Length: 430
Image 1 (cartoon, one colour):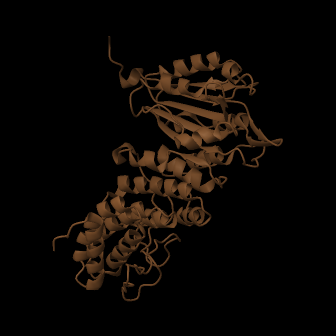
Image 2 (tube, helix red, strand yellow):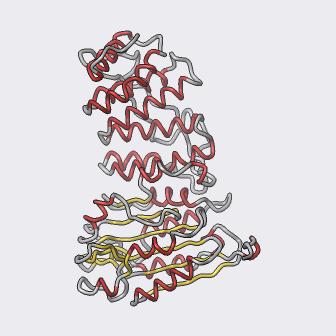
Image 3 (cartoon, rainbow, N blue to C red):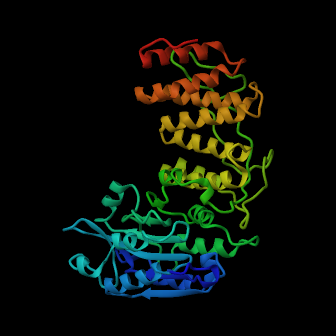
């Protein structure tokens, strides 16, 4: 058997429009409009590749076996593959399996007329890593949404990079036009003068601009991004990175730590565009918008999961371009720490603020306000952590950070040591 050379490779774009998602006669997702919009985008731009490619459009298909055959053909292509799916998700109530509704699918006929979701993963699972992208713009009905909440994601092939959104059943509808996520994905794809952005960057910018309804499932989730190696990402956007705000004041049992000019219960990361002290290139490459105000807006409106996922997507970009030890990476870690605090995830917030403190201490003076502010944030969040096992696990690293700050009020270190002793049930060595 001969190996396939680059010259022999072909790419493939498979665009699948399922049934429209309609709620109270208002269209939530119009798959045909989405396919029409993608259909005019040049294939090399969609695939990020100039090799010869094939394109398959499936709009109005009624037979799931027809879709399966097209999917199987696309999966057999030796080069890059993009699979786009738009429509509504439902559940076969008898088998409790997710399906993409095709044209004519009803609640009674879903077992015979819908596309079982696991077929997608089964056809893509044997493809080489790094060659497959799945792009989703979906709406879940009231039977599918609880199952997605149970999963916490939308299962797909581990060999594919999956990006997209699934709007909840209560969404009032976006009309008969191109849905926000797909429209902004295309706009970001076309508006970058410096070259075609990588898919993660396109996704992050599209999510940030799409004004998604509350509760939307954004893929990949923050947990899935955590599991993805930074080296797998392509070129990153260049965002404006501002210096952190005035550090905050941590609170330990029995005393209120005082860090000079600090104010508030915990430090906050900078979400507004950096106008005074930019630490990096200004603006977002390609569209000039800074994602941080939108991220902060999501968090303050209670959409914590979306804010966390979007911030982590940008952090992954920054890690790839500037490296984990860069000021830019530290700044996005600060944003994630603050988002975790706002969401009440004090375990993650403690870990992130402690990491920020170590990163800043590696290149800044122990007396620097940003270093002490990070320590204040870590200490505050640790004192809010009620899970004894989690607090005991995070305590030693926090105390090592506090010990490295000679100007720190010694009461704070002693109080932290005392709490850790109680948590561990044994004295902590000096």
